[in-house]
Image (cartoon, rainbow, N blue to C red; front, side, top):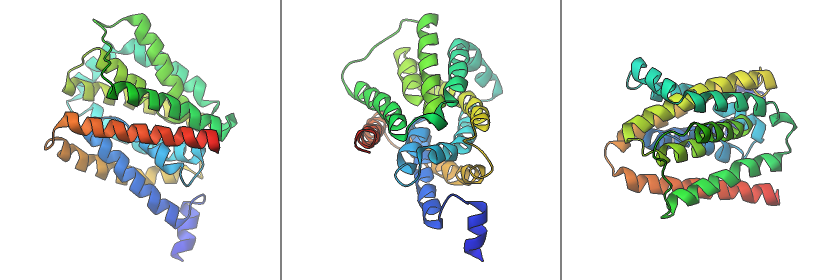
Length: 260
C-alpha cells in the first residue's frame, strides 16, 4: 500500500531515489546556509548521479525559490527592495535571457547540458581559489548587463546562476551581509522567473512538481543548520572548502559530459 501511494505521488522516482535526493537537498541547504549560494549546483550535481538532468532541474526549482525568498527577506522588505533597485539592470537582463534559455532545456543533449553547467563552475571555482582578484571601482552598467545576461542564460538552462553572480558581487567588494541579502534577492527573483519559464517549457509539470515540493523540507532543514554553523566558524576557511566542493562537482559534471 505504502509503495503504491509513493508511486502515485512520485511516479518518476523510486523510494530509494527519493531518499537519496533528500540527502542531496539537506547538504545543498546546509552549504547555502553557510555561504549564501551553491544550492542549485549541489542539487544538479548530486541528483544527476542517479536521475536525468531534466528531472534534477525540476527537483531544485521549488526549494531554490523558497530558500532564496527566506534569504532575501532576512533583513526586511525595505532592504530587499533597495537591493532590487540597485541591481535592476542585472535582474532585467538576467531575467530575459533566463526565460529565453529555459525553452532549450528539453531539446539539449544531456551531455551538452552537463558541459554547459560544469565548465563555468570549474572556471569560477579555480578563479576564486587562485590569488588573482579582479576588482570593479563601481557599478558599470555595460558589465552588469553582460554578466546578468550570462548568468540568466546559465540559469535558464541549468537552474544555476550563482557563480557569475558571486564573481560580480565579489569584484564590487560588496560587504558580507549586503552580499548575502543581494544574493537572496537576485537568486530569488531569478528562481521565480525560472519556475515560470519551466512551467512553460514543461520541465515542471504534474509528474515532477511533487518531487520538487518534497525537496523544500530537507533544503530548509539544511539551511537552518548551515546558518547556525556560519555563526560559529571562520567564514573564509569554510568558503574555501566550499569552493573546493564546487570545483569537484564541476569537474565531475565535465567528466560525465565528455565521457558519458
